[in-house]
Length: 400
Image (tube, one colour):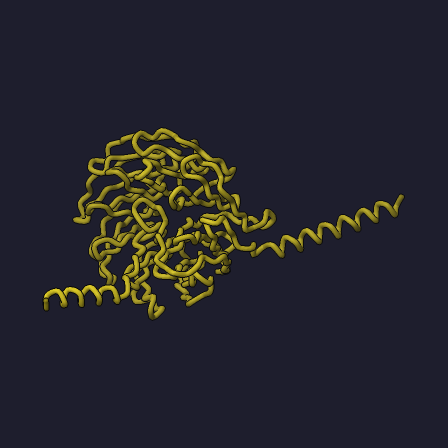
């Protein structure tokens, strides 16, 4: 009887204990780049817009009920996902094109002067590691933070900022690494993708026809990555042998997003198409044209896929057919800004930034969008154009 009471007491205490926050350990949240969290929050998705003041190329990171995003000029913002209000900010004092990751109340982000660790409770930089420009988004694995820099070094730092790995590879490592089964996969501007063991030994490398800026995705024992030679490559994880490659007609800078449940991989190209291919053999299932470069990863939720284009539109498509469910143009045509920030999804909230320096929260399930921050400017321009037209017409008539 006493044993049963003890068990019941332990279960009760566990139920009362707060649920640990889900970490955001990599670019787009996982090795498949789905950019999705189920969302354990109890708030209702709200529509809002928030200005950071300078272009946003960073993809947001989600932790608890807060979204973390960094502007190109190095300002980190913590934004309440329910209200769209700023909770706190921090000047990283260095420009950045890397995306943040968050693990156990510690945020890690690359900057032009190296990698920085931020305590999200005290809002302070707790350490920074001085190295060359870090555009590579870090990956947290087995208590180490892995990333590359422009000097071609692949680093592994512990949570105190001490170097545990420093391996020199060729080219610039702008690609964001993934780590699976003690193997690190990362692309280089020297046209190669590398597989490096966490024991610091190189497993294999594979050479493509041009530099690799795309970040690899992992699915079904394969590594999938794009190259600026216009091809998407699928490689065997164990030996780097080519499973298949497909030419997408222009540079593939965008990271691929893999959906193992549907055997699909989604990737954008500089030709302006978001293409869905079969993971097993590279067969093209469908392709959706936007007319401008696509360099964001696509976020995946159930039957929907969301991505941005440099034409200033955010697209949400049916993942099976490639047909548009809805689009959002925050620039209202006249003030279009390229979207290079890869979207993420928390529950029903679809979040992304653009080159105008704004972050947006949409409801992906109800296809609801916030009012454009540029709407009043567009109306003002339209009024000016109408007034000028009326004046010109009157002048022309008065001369007759």
